[in-house]
Length: 110
Image (cartoon, rainbow, N blue to C red; front, side, top):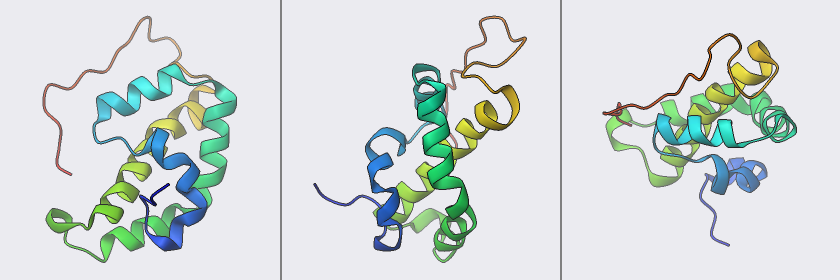
């Protein structure tokens, strides 16, 4: 298996295939398709490394991130999406949101 993340984040590599998603729509769909134990495991593994991950990504120009740093940034974006379920809703789906869905027609870059 080829590493996707920077070497300093090798401990998070098991989550890369699932959570290094390029779009918010993909991240939202992954959250919706996951169980709370899966979300909690991802959150527990990644949250303690959040500041370090952001600092690593900040070392590069945003419009010229190396592939491994871009993958790490996507992992951070997924953590933000998952954090809403873990910290706020305590469930996969948003509370009191009926059948809310997220579908962007254009994504911010990166």
